[in-house]
Amino acid sequence: MTKNKSNSAHVVIDMLYDFIDGSLACINGETAVDKAVDFINNSPQYPVIFICDSHPAEHCSFAENGGIWPPHCVSGTRGASVHDKFYNNVINPASRPSSDNILKKGEDPKREQYSGFEAVSRSGETLSEYLHRNRIKEVFVSGIATEFCVNETVKDLSKAGFYVTVIKEALAYVDERGHIDTLENFKNFGISII
Ligand code: VGL
Ligand code: ZN
Image 1 (cartoon, protein in one colour):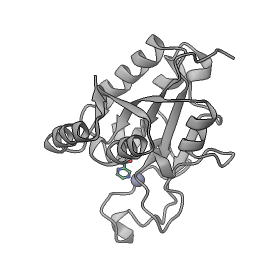
Image 2 (tube, rainbow, N blue to C red):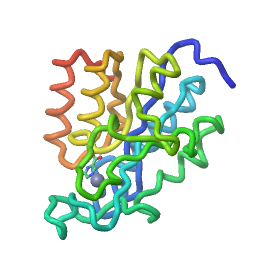
Image 3 (cartoon, protein in one colour):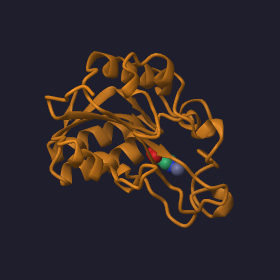
């Protein structure tokens, strides 16, 4: 295994088809994927963690069940899958999505979970456990949606003491104003934006 001497990692949030071209397609989705893949290939020594929204059909966040969202990221569907470019265009095989680095959230039908801190791996490991086990101090973040999952995850990372840098071009969002306001607010948390 490659040594990660820089103690840095890259967290890729919800780069899933429903947020890119599906029921909850966000602004800048395809570009965000390309920029995230570029970042991975330009820093091949950083471990990559994929946070994935993954819902049962009866999830409480869906409008038909009283929530605010159209049905999205239903487990096992294309909409819940990580974009193919992370499988096909990432050069280092260890940086591609796999059962070792995919962490899922939103599987409990009764709970909305935006933050990547609520996600768990197949073996039950949380994001914060994964980062501590790998002695990570600095986290780069890409993903969707800026105002929701990215916002919550970035703040939780910062509160937990990690140095956080958001890769602006590798974000997608529901609303441009919300995206800009969220980035502006990150500055109050000492979060870097590149
Ligand atoms: C998200 C809407 C619904 C997100 C998840 O992760 O940003 N947004 N479910
Ligand atoms: Zn969701």
